[in-house]
Image (cartoon, rainbow, N blue to C red; front, side):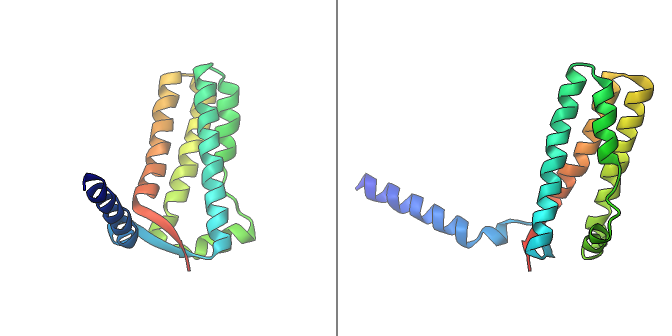
Length: 143
């Protein structure tokens, strides 16, 4: 009897989570093509990997690496394809990209000029706040 009740409860939880998942997720859906979704997710994974490399460089006080990595992330992709992709996104969502890139530019510049781990970590925290805001506020949905 206890086993049957346990199975019933887990089944109920499993199916209710799957059925109502879209209703629970209060983030704004950004409708994109599957190609654009793949590109955006690749960019996000690249950013995450780069952030990890910056943290490792800061731990070793390797400011040359911080300047290099953050500098690369500070420049926006101005190819025609990237600009067309951005045009298809909402203005509010699009505004997060420049904030991210400017944050990396500041991190790169200040790491070069000051070489201060604590200052750089504070800047990296600000950059990551943009990532958190994006992930908490939006989700990509294939149209």
